Each structure stands twice: as C-alpha cells, then as structure tokens.
Image 1 (tube, rainbow, N blue to C red):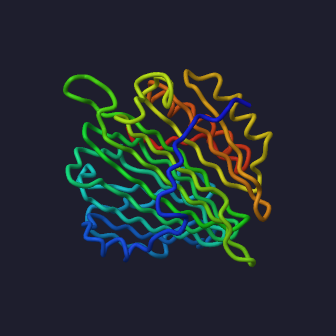
Image 2: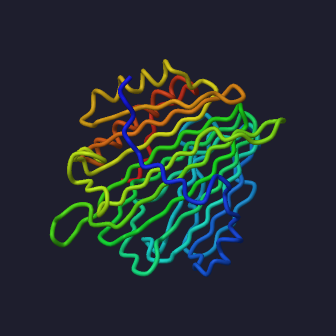
Image 3: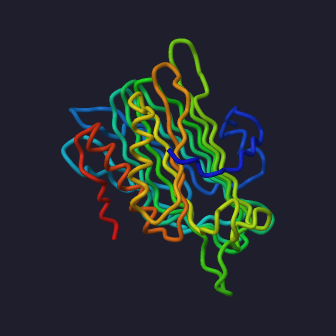
Length: 306
C-alpha cells in the first residue's frame, strides 16, 4: 500500500464540537439552516423531521433503486458562499434507515473579504443505519477562504461513506490556486453503551500562499484533491489495499490510511491528487461503487443531475 498523501493537521480548538447556537452568538450571520431526520416506514427510509430556513433546503425525496435508500438533494438558492456566511446542517439517521445525501450543483466559494465562509455539519447515525454523503465538488475562487467542520457520531454497527473533491476556481489571469484557504475538519466518534470514543480526527488545510501548492511538495504539482472517508465494521486492511489498487488505474496520485478499530468498527481515508475533477469523480465513483455492490447489492451511483 502506498504512503498516504500528506495533509496538514491543524488541531484548531480541540476535539469538542461547538454547538450551533454558540456559533450563532459569535456574530456571524447564519445564511442557511437545514435539519433532516430519517427513519424507516413501510420498508423504506423517509424523512420524519425536516426544517429549513434561509439559503438551504432539500428537494423532494426520490429513490434510485428498490433498496429503500432515500436520496435527498441539498440546494443553495443563493448559488454560492460569501464572506462571513455561516451554514448549519443537522442530520439524524435513525436505526436501520438509509440516506444518500448529495447537492444539486458544485459548492462555490467566492471572495470572502473580512471573514471566511463556513459550513458546520452534525450527522448522527443509529444502530445499523447508513449514510452516503456525496456532494458535488467544492470550488474555491480567487481570494476565497472556506472552513468546513463536520462531526459524525456513529453506532458501531452503522456505516458512513463520504466522497469530496476540491477544485480551484477560475481566475482572471488564468492562474490556479488564487484562493486564500480551504480547511476541512472531520471528527468521527463511535457511540456505544460505554460512551463516546474518537475514532478519527481528519484535518485537511490548504493555504496556497503558504504551502506553495503549485510546486512539488504539499500537492506534488497537482491542482485538484479528492477524499473518500469510509467507516464501517467491514473496513479492514484488505479493503484498503483493494481500493489502493483500484486507484492505480486512474491518472491520480493516491494514498490510503486506516484507523485503529474501536468497538468492532474501523475507518479508512483515501486521498487522491489529480489535475482533473472528472478523473477524481470517476475514481471516487468506482471505489464507492465497489462498496455499494459488495455490501448492499446496489449498482454504481447515477444521480442524473446533468
């Protein structure tokens, strides 16, 4: 297995996730809020709690196959994240429920003078539940600063798959990496009868003016970054090696890392560098397709957005 792609581990304020209410009191404007609760009714997963306000909402649910997995598409009618914007997302998937959550289009972060744009997400998974989180790519434009903080609380029997791609936006002079900062922080906790245990704290911090990402080193001369996070009792070294082998068929530089097991479940992080959003989407789609077919008998994702 190849060495994992380096990521900056900026520990920030520690491992405790700040409550959304506390964030709102910091003077940042909450531009959008979305709450979604999913449960099983009549053999299918359905929303039993749904709330939105501001510039976040979801489209009507749909089902891509006969598995009962519900698919929701998040929409930002404003079209972009701007300076000092704060978006709050709260998702709960109850025991046995199955949620696929995606976005209608790319998340675009434009200039953020004065303060960064931020998204905070909290996801809780009940016993034997499942979440696939597959947003379209994040595009950071010139002079953009963006922070994404996510906290996942899983039962030892639940399953999480999250795939993301980061792309530098267009610049008037044609140069890449004109954004100021992109910071992605994922806390993954395992909750059982013995309490909460931290499975992984995954930090990715890209600061082009500091990292000189256009040259060899932090990004090895590549412009795009893809990330796949999988937490499931079936994650092991054999799966990590298999996904690493699959990645070799793509025009990308890839590494895979495993976590230690907690309460019988483990996680892996696949990180891949390329110069193409399409190539990374194909790579991540192939990897998630393997998991969907092997674990659930489902076909590869076809979200039919275009």
